Image (cartoon, rainbow, N blue to C red):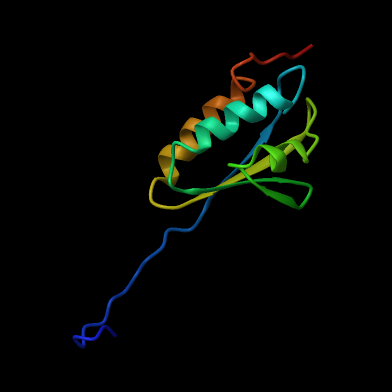
Length: 106
């Protein structure tokens, strides 16, 4: 209850979580991680990357590099906040594009 005696109900949307397979040849290396951080920082939402239960901040280049995520690795991306849907959609496109480097299937 607020000071004025009014009850305020805050509804928070559940996080958006999607699973991806890394498709570019070099995996989630420094340039790809820098691009991910740059994109993530456009949004106010919290962005997490999870690999085998290990979770890092999607806005931290060192955290992302610590995942050592090579091509073929499955990662989950979890987004929560006011602009979560937009962030999740743009991040999904970036990951699917091989972090802007192209998807390689060889």
